[in-house]
Length: 129
Image (cartoon, rainbow, N blue to C red; front, side, top):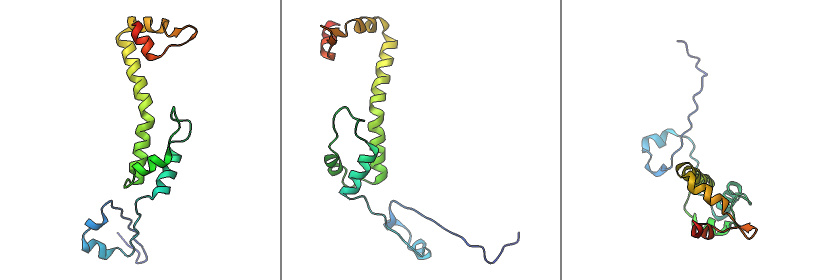
């Protein structure tokens, strides 16, 4: 193999624990950039982008969510939003599995969903069952 003396090597490293890096490793890195945890405004912006208006059944208090996620990284917040988005789907899958497991109960439940021309509450449906 022939190598050109002008070949360059570019090394990019990332760590969630930069203070635990070996001092010999740190000496070999010319530049170090610390990307700190997001501030309140940054967390709020992330939450606003990842949980847009209309996703939740009720209005989201982005300021409260931002306060409660203090100390969280952007990746942590993204995972939280992903889990929140999956929650309704998991609930729907549980309902589908219940329907498949007990079709006779489901048939009765669907015929009794309307009470006086309006949709019955879950409590009203459960009482009738």
